[in-house]
Length: 224
Image 1 (cartoon, rainbow, N blue to C red):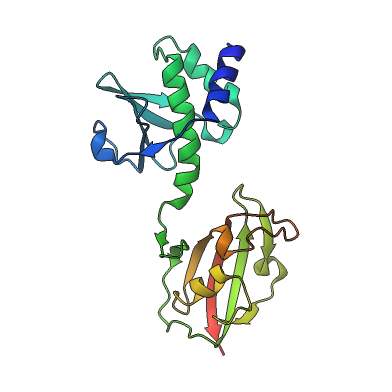
Image 2: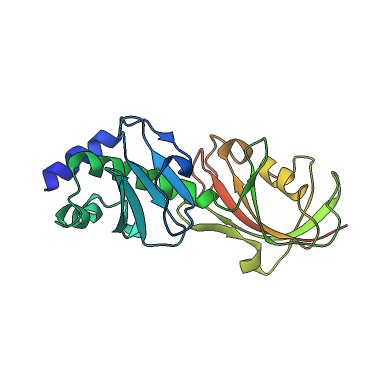
């Protein structure tokens, strides 16, 4: 069994993927957040729902529910239970497809609720403000927390209990911050999903590895 799983895992390295709209998959009784297909796996579709510890697999024109602990998806042996489940009858090909689908879902689910700007910056409103949007050159006062993709926190003004002030849109902070703040009303709290080219790029800064996608929980308190 371990040998089989290892072979399947290695196969993922060379797997290219394509994404399908849920309309191409079988309907479910629950609202689906994301659907995944691959052109080389005809008739297979994986359907995911945010916050659920299961997903749906379409195969042979039928949809089955598969329980799965997504928190352990990095462990190849976490897929063993579904392979050993005689009722599911998961084939080697289906297992390869499922592993790829779960890997993609773990990335895509982080984007749910974000509005993406042409630059690639993602903004998810947590609390809608009622003030004006800061203008370029204004001093903006914020509270923030910064996270890496694995959820680890690398910085926080809230932990220091000290607000942070900077001039918006003039390059005093990373590009993702400048663009994000100039799209938020005063009083707003939002998550910013900042791709590496709007963050620190190829530079490694303290606990932030090079080419990192960053997540900031930022609250626009006011302007001066």
